[in-house]
Structures are given as C-alpha cells and as structure tokens.
View 1 (cartoon, rainbow, N blue to C red):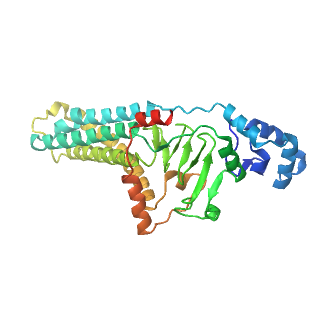
View 2: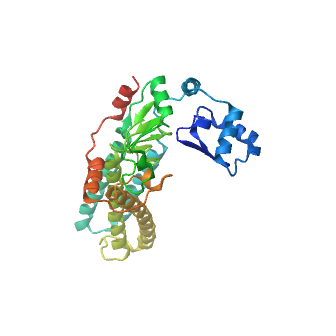
View 3: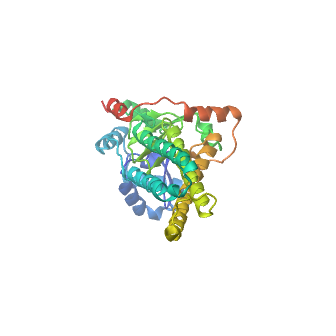
Length: 341
C-alpha cells in the first residue's frame, strides 16, 4: 500500500491534511483513526489531524522516502491479452457468419461487392486493434528515486503550477498543473495520469481499455477511434445485407425452398448480433468524439473531478484534435526497453 499522493487523505471519518498522514500506509492510518476516534474527528478535521499525528507521530521526509523506495513498486509493463483475444473472437464470429450465412444469400451481381467491402473493413478493424495494442500509448519514462526531488515535491504538496486552476471547472482546467508521481518518481505533465494497471504514467491519459489490453493515451488514441469506426461500419454493412435478405429485396436465385426457413432464422439471428455490435461501437465512438471536440478526456469527464461537458472554443477544439490525431508514434517494445534502462 502506497503513501498518499494527494493534498489530503479521505476516510470515512473526514478529510485529513497530507501533513498528518504522508509517509504512512493505509493500514497504519486506519489504525490511528480508530485509536483517535474519541477526539471529535467526525466534526472537526483539524482535531482529526492533531489526534492522528499524536498517535502516528511525526515522520520525516527521509523516513517517508525510505518507505516509498522500500515498497518495491515495479516498473514492468503489465499487459493482459484476454480482451484482445475476445475482440478477435467477436470479429471472427461476425465475419465468419457473414461469409457463410448472410452474403451467400445475395444475388451474385452484388454479392462480390459486399464481400470485398466487408473484407476490407474487417482487415482495417484487425489492423487497428493490433496497432492500438502494440504501439506506445504515451508512456512517460520513469526516473530513479531521488530524495532531493521527492523532498521538494513533498514540501509543496506534490503539486505545482497555477494553483488557482485547481478549482476551475470545464475543459483545460488542469492545463497548468503538474503533479508528482511517487511511483515513477517524476513530475508528470498536465493531463497525464498514472495507470496502476499498466504501471506507468501516460501522456494525455484517456482511460485503460481492457478490450485492447492497454491504456488509451496521446499516441494510440487515433487508432482506437479507427478501431471503433471500422468495426461499427463493418457491422452496419453486414446488418444491411441481412435486412435485404430477410425482407426478400435481394435474394439469390439459386436459394432452395427447402432450407429457406432455416436460412431466414439464421440470418435474423446474425442481424441481431450485427445490430448489437455496431450499436455499441458507434455509441462508444460518439462518446469519444464528443469528448475530443470538447477538449476533454474520459478520465476528466467521468473521473473524480467530473468536469462539466461544454463546447470549447474553436482553437481548443482544433488543438484537441491535433493532440489526438497528430502525436508522434513509437513502438511500445522499443520504447519500454529505453525507459527501463
């Protein structure tokens, strides 16, 4: 359990200033709060601070730094491919059912066109998935622990910049705020955040996506949007083909009457699958694009800060789209080896 990295520690009994709890782990803080429960902590945070400090005792910056280093936090990139293989399965089911059930029931004159279109869209979806997972999402290289840097960050509350922006609502409120990461031992730039799953600080952190097994950040956001778009359009095309066959607008002349009923229900079932997949993908795509146009990330919109969703100025909108679409690309494997040297 790590020491608190924010300006206060929130518990069920109130909010304690950082000076009262910094350097202690959660178990020690909770034990101290229980022991200090008779000091009016429910109604008076200042009393909670002094009571907790008396129980825990003052801790020096040297001791806090030593505990932080001894916590053994890893810099290894943690990755799960379960979501990736799940997405591969969804794509395989959709494309396989399309080529084996839905598309063969269309007339030969348009069947080939739809097969080519679905094939191209499916290939782009797979490529977007692989690229999103394999490139660097915006990893900020960690640094070795440095007591001078930690002591200075601790003295100013692990946060520097224009402090009046901390209470600003809306897009761009944290544009001037840098926070110290006690895991990576760095001052991370504005809008960056530490992902506890991946184990790194990510530039312009949007969210950690289990479906692609990696964080969505400054450098792979565009490919994630491309994945949603191509997958949604592919499902929409197959849905349209299924509707054309179910309604009998376009039916192959060589369809046998004996199995027409079976093909009808199989096509209807596949169409429901395509509708569900395309609806979800376009829903997430719409959410992501709306946040991009409002110059917000998913973490900023739905995280603890919960910034107000409002349209930004044209300059901020263009700047946000530029950050999403034009960030430099790095190979994640090469970049991680350089970061861990």
